[in-house]
Amino acid sequence: MANARLTSHFVPHQPEDSLVSPRNAAHRLDDDAVLAGLGYKPVLARRMGPFGNFAISFNVISILSGCMTLYGFGLNTGGPAVIMWGWAGVGLMVLLLGMSLAEVTSVYPASGGLYYMANRLGGPWWAWVTGWLNLLGLLGAIAGIDYGAALFTGAFASLQWGFTPTPEKTMMIFAAILLLHAVLNVLGVRLVNFLNGVSVWWHLVGVAVIVGTLTLAPVQHRSVDFVFTHFNNGTGFSNGLYVTALGLLLAQYTFCGYDASSHLSEETTQAQISAPKGIVRSIWVSWIAGFILLAGLTFAIQDYAGTQSSATGVPPAQIFLDVLGPTSAKGLLLIVIVAQLFCGNAETAAASRMVFAFSRDEGIPFASTWRKVSTRTKTPVRAVWLSAGAALVLALPSLYSPTAYAAVTAINVIGITPAYAIPVYLRLRAGDKFQPGPWNLGRWSKPVGWTAVAWVIFVTVLFCLPQVSPITTDSFNYAGVALLAVLVLAWVLWLTRGRRHYKIPTLGSTAEHTALAEDVV
Image (cartoon, rainbow, N blue to C red; front, side, top):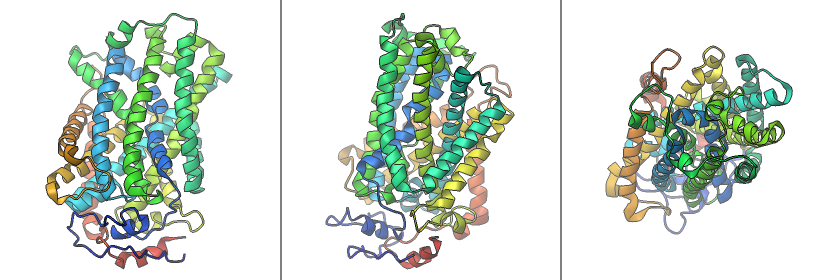
C-alpha cells in the first residue's frame, strides 16, 4: 500500500504524559493531521459524515432491539410504572454520561475510543482494564443483539409456518445472522454507512407505524393511570424499592453502544465535532423515540398475564397478536426484526474497529493478524471476522442453559457501562490539565461529569445484585461473575503480555507509522 502522506498541519511531538490535545485552533478539523498528532497513520477510509456517525450510535442503541427484547423483563420487574418512569430517568442519566464522554472524544477522536482516552489521561493500566471491559462488552453486545434477532425471527417463523424455535434451530438462525453481518462489514464502510442511514429512518418510521397502528386499532386501551402508575412484581422479592431499581435494566441495557461514534471517528470527517455530536444526538433521539414506543406498547396490552407468558416467547409479539390478529402482527414483527438486523450490523462495525485499534496497540494476542486492513476496502477484515466469531462462542452456552442469554446480556452491560465512566473520571481527576476540544461542556463539565460517574457506580453495583427470588442455578445473576471474569482476564493478560507489549504511540510521533504499513493486505 502506498504510504499515506502526513499533511503540512502535522503537530510537533509532545511529551507522552501530556494531557494537551494535539491540535491547534487553526487546524483542529484537519482530520488526518489530528490523527497523526495522536500518533497514528491514517489507514482507514474516511467516508462517513456527521449524519453517518450519529447513525452508527443510534442504530447500536436501537430502541426496536433493546426495548422489544427486554420488554418482558420490564413487565415482570416493576411493570408499566417502572418501564415508563425508569426510561425517563435512566435516559437523563445516560445523556449526562454521553455528554461527558463526548467532551473527551472531541480531544481524542481515535478508533480505540475509551481505552485510548484512558491511556492518555491515566496511563497504560487504566487503558488496559478499560480496553478489555469495552471489548468484552462490545462482543457481548453483538451476541445479545443478534441472538435477540434470532429469537424474534423464530417467533415470526412460528406464526408464519408453524416453526418450532428449539435452542438448536435458534442457534442456527443466530449463526446465519452473524455471517450476514460479517459479510456486509467486510464489503467496506461505504456500505455500512449507507445501511446505517437507511436504518435511522427505518427505526423512526417503524416506531411511528407500530405506535400508530396499536393506537388506532379498534380495541380497548389501558388507562393513563395504568400506564404510568401500575406496579407489578413478579421477581419474588418483597421490597418494592429494590424491584424498582432492578427494573431500570430495561432502559440501561438499551442505552448502550453510543461509543460507536468514537470507534468510527477515524472514518468520519470533522471527527472532533462530528463524533461528539453523534454520541449526544443518538442518546436524546433514542430517549424520545423510545419513550413513545414503550408508551404505545403499554397502552395496547390486552392480557397482562398472557403477554408475559406468550407462547411466542416474545411479549411484544403477543401484544401485536392480541390487538391486530396474526396477519398485521407479522408485519409489525418484521419491522422489529429488520431493525434488529440493522442494529447488529452497526454493532459489528463498532466492535471490529475496537478489535483493530486494540490490536494496533498490541492489546490483543496475535495482534499482527487482527490489525490487518484491506487495501481494496480500507476495512479491518480480519477484525470483523474475529468479532463475529467471538460473538458466536459467547452465545453457544444458550444451547444448554436458558439463563445463558441473560448472562450474555450481563457481559454487555457490565462490561461497557463501567468502561464509559473511566475516561470521564480520569478527565475530572486531571482537572485544569485537561484542555477541552472544540466540542465541550464549558463550566458544566465537572458537575455533569461527577453526576455521570456516580450514576455508573450505582448501576454497576445494582446490576450485580440478584434479580429473581429464590436464587437458583437458573435464576442466578451472572453479571457480577462476568465483571469479575473480565477483570481477572485483564489482570492475567496484563501480567503475561500487556505490560511488555501494549503501548500506544507517543503524541505526534511518526516512528510507529512506518510499522503500520505492513499491516495493510
